[in-house]
Amino acid sequence: MPDLSIRLAGMADRPVVERLWPMFRRDLAEFGGPPPSADGTFRGDWLHLAFSGSGWAPYLLTLEDSPAGFAFVRGLTAPTRVLNSFFVVHGARRKGIGLHAAREVVARHPGPWEIAFQDANTAAVHFWRRVATEVADDAWTEERRPVPARPDVPPDVWISFDTSSSAHD
Image (cartoon, rainbow, N blue to C red; front, side, top):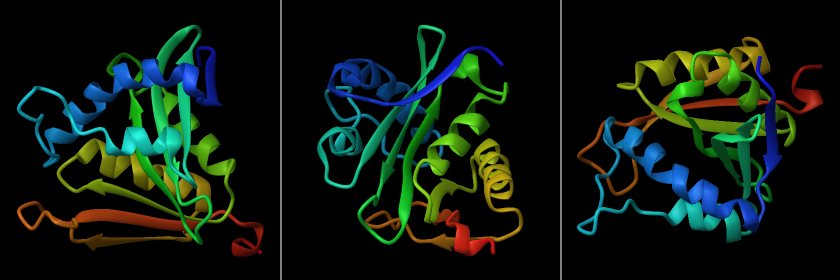
């Protein structure tokens, strides 16, 4: 695997993540995520919260010196952590980079986890089930939940698992 770095993103990294953000949102739009607003930009609530919200942690993924993606974790002060946003640039996909990054981000915050994705995104379905199995063996669950304030879209799929040591003893 190429030289992959997964590090907590600081304010100096925010412009890089902001440039990756439209690629991520465009990918989500394909599976029922909201389209761009009238000015051509995508909502950036999660992006803003990742860098300024309490209980959030943004991560930047880099391959050598190039940005390769990001991961936003929320719920660090709550009972359950949520992998709120996860993105790997197209040129870095299907090389094990996403799996490695997801496992490392989850390992940095032991405890209960939830990750949401859409059934229509078959690549995400396979990917997140594989991540859950790699991280928690067969001790994970999957359920469908309605998307808040979006009755027009199918429910999200939520995978849940626990990485705390007591969960595997």
